Structure formats: structure tokens, C-alpha cells
Amino acid sequence: MRFVTYKFKGQARRIPFSYDKFHDMYEAAAAAEGIDLKNFLAMEQQVAMTTRHKSAVKDYRIKEFTRMGFSELFLHKDEAE
Image 1 (tube, one colour):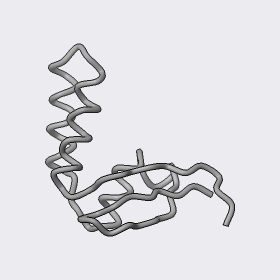
Image 2: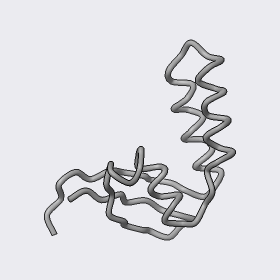
Image 3: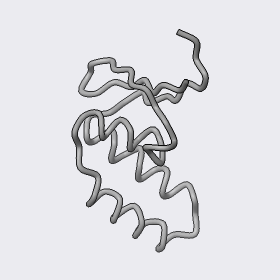
Image 4: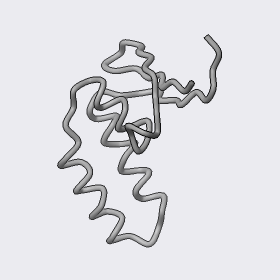
């Protein structure tokens, strides 16, 4: 089983994660906090189309999630209970 651990507005959280439900850990964390990513994903797609550097998309994602109140996001693979 996989888990995502993160801090949201300073509070530590841990949620189960499945690639069947979410594209990545960022989408899972946002869903757990009830955040709509529609506008974020549209802007992320625009960043991807207008840059040659893959790191630009990653930097955008990290900065925006930090602005939303997320920090210390980690995906833990096959962690035993």
C-alpha cells in the first residue's frame, strides 16, 4: 500500500494513495483537503506548452502548492503498517 504524507497549513497529514484514483501525490493531497485543481491544471498545461524545460512545470507545481498551504509532500511506497 502507498501513502502520501504532507503538511497542510502546518498540520501533518497521512492519506492512502492509489494510481487508480489519482495522477500523482499532489492531486491526492488536494482532493483530501477539498481543493479544486481545475484552474491550476489548466495553467500547468499552459506552462508545459510554453517552455522547453521540464523543470519549469515542476517548479510551478511546487510553488503553487506551497502557496496553497502544502509542504513536505512525500510518497511512501509499499510501507508496512
